[in-house]
Length: 187
Image (tube, rainbow, N blue to C red; front, side, top):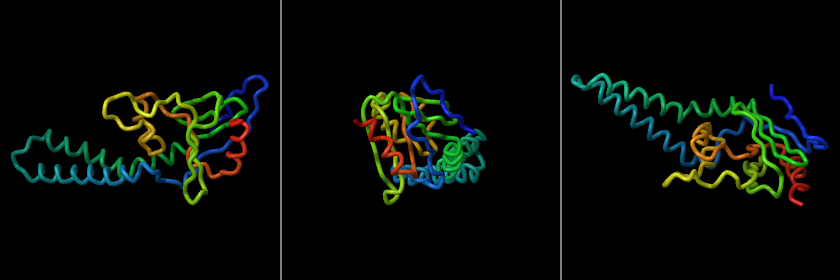
């Protein structure tokens, strides 16, 4: 059970909510789903080819099994992880801060300006809100895709290698309530 974060003197909660656990896919999945299937397919092909070769070293067969497990996580497992994380995630919007409390810890950002990104999806029934520009669009590594690409996909742990997880509210079903609470922050 997630607790309410400690509020500062004269601070109050404008809105609180959680992500909708029934929303499984993001825009990034248009890349991740085909990529995951290719990884799993290659791992299966590799392992079957190695297993059918009588002179293949045992290490090659184990190497294939590791990639089969990785492929299964990418294709199926990450969605179970995503649901488990969503069930333990709470969002709080105070008059001063946006706060995310999830299994990874508690992250917050001061509300100095309007959110950086506000996206409606699911026939406008859900809202994603990304706050602040403190998490850069890229990890700073050459050729590395946007670190936000991994957010809310079940692959969130990749963000730990870069600048960290963005402060964001994902898959919020209370669209009107959150938008109403965001209006004073934008003023």
